[in-house]
Length: 57
Image (tube, rainbow, N blue to C red; front, side, top):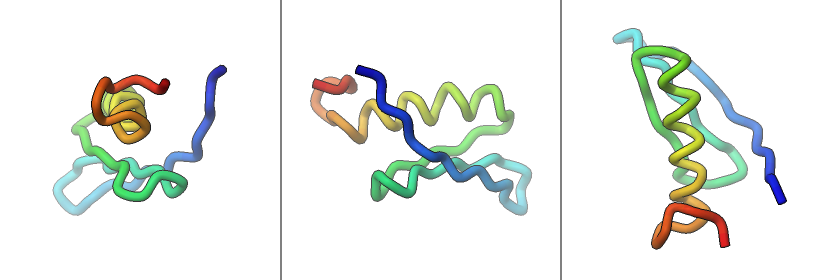
């Protein structure tokens, strides 16, 4: 089963894109490009859901 989460994306004063997942407290990441941010937030979500293996059980 695939789960979907809303992701909030902002750009900081240094030009980094910052993504956070409101439904998962503490789940956030940053990157210089939106393409890289997309990859990183998917990885962050996996780690936040199951920090031991990086995958949802």
